[in-house]
Image 1 (cartoon, rainbow, N blue to C red):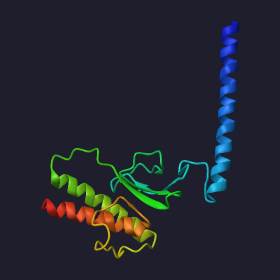
Image 2 (image 1 turned 135 degrees about the vertical axis):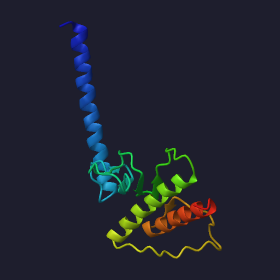
Image 3 (image 1 turned 180 degrees about the horizontal axis):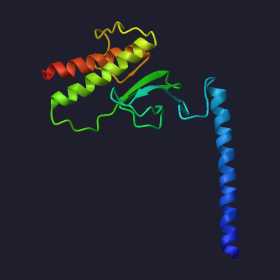
Image 4 (image 1 turned 120 degrees about the horizontal axis):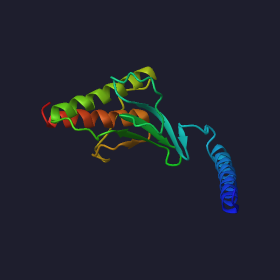
Length: 161
């Protein structure tokens, strides 16, 4: 073994050890900041994965997390104290009908999540003296659900599908 090879191995050994120590310190910091923090695929800094799905036709049995390509998911930002909804839109459907079918499928998945977790689907959203826009972030999952439902029903209604 040459001196250069030995040096490179030592360099990488030290680098890995330093990164492991930094990671452990960072996890300790997050656990101190956020009481429910765990070092797993559902947490990353202030973000916490709440729920997600690949769609109604998913039969893979895989768990969804922050690191999976979900069709729809909810993430909670502990710092902002807000829930965020993400919907995968990198699909080509060949027309508005296919888009609306997909959005309705995602709404159905969200509705099932709401029902399975005894969450209200009748959030009272006021647009007067407030925001008339449909946001993908909200203070509660119930508000997030209503925002998405308004979006899906409005989008499909406008396009007469």
